[in-house]
Amino acid sequence: MKRPWSTLLILMLLTLSLACRSLVVAPSPTAAPSPTTAPTLPPATPLPAEPKQPPATPGPILITFQNHSGETICYVRISPTASDSWGEDWLGADETLAAGADRTFAISPGSYDLRAENCNSDPIYEEWNLSIFDNMTLTAGGGREGMITLLLDNASGETICYVYISPTADTSWGPDRLENDEVIPAWENRAFTLAPGSYDLRADDCNQEMLGMQWGFELIEDAVWTAGIDRTRIGVSFVADRYYLREGECATISWNVRNATRVIYEGRDVAAQGSEIQCPLESVLLQLEVEGLSGSWQTETLKLTVLGRY
Image (tube, rainbow, N blue to C red; front, side, top):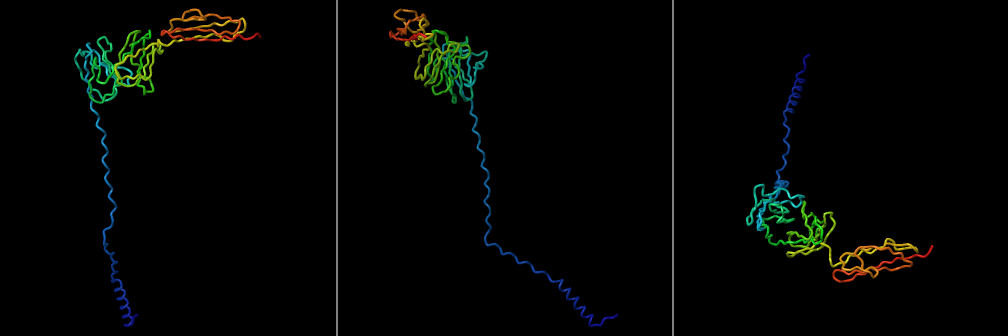
């Protein structure tokens, strides 16, 4: 069926209107205004500092050892103080150090004990607990400037097998200064080289029984220490095996005296060591008189008490 012209015209106008709507371009968005100042930037992270370098390892220390002892040195031993042994001979099997000669050794810094021996392995020089942090010259037979000789004189009448020389400030005796199989026979002596200072001294026999001890020995120049019994002191033991008796009972009285020229028991001269049986009928006071080497007298008493009958 054909449509009227007016209707067609209306349809054409509607179609054209829709086409124009689809061609309209959307407006551009409003641009943000440009900032007037630059934004603040976060602070830059600093680069890490270079790590500290460890201190350089110290180089070797040079010890020049001079032999002024008048003997040939066949063995030189340089041992760390913490070590329990002297270690190897630093001269070697075929080298010796003649009297008047010297020899230089390179060691690491630290604390050392040093010892030089003649060809019979007898010590002719020793130094203990020596702090070595600078080049140094040591002299066998002449010591080292500032060092002091302590002569230990054994007047104990027995062999000394152990010697302890400890700085007074230390809390232990430290090592035996004789080492190995060395001893100091009765009435002989032995020299030790030490730094000036205050020392505690002790000498023991081979059973480690003390023969002599001295505290706070001030060593400021070459000195002599005599190890042995103090012969100015009287030693007295005056005892009974029982002190309380019944009538008719007995007690044994014993005495032992040292460092005396005369001993008198109950008015009679007796030997320095002895005993006697006493059977008193009543309580009694017994007396022992002792004259010391210096001429002084010391009196000891003890009482035996006799109890009544049962």
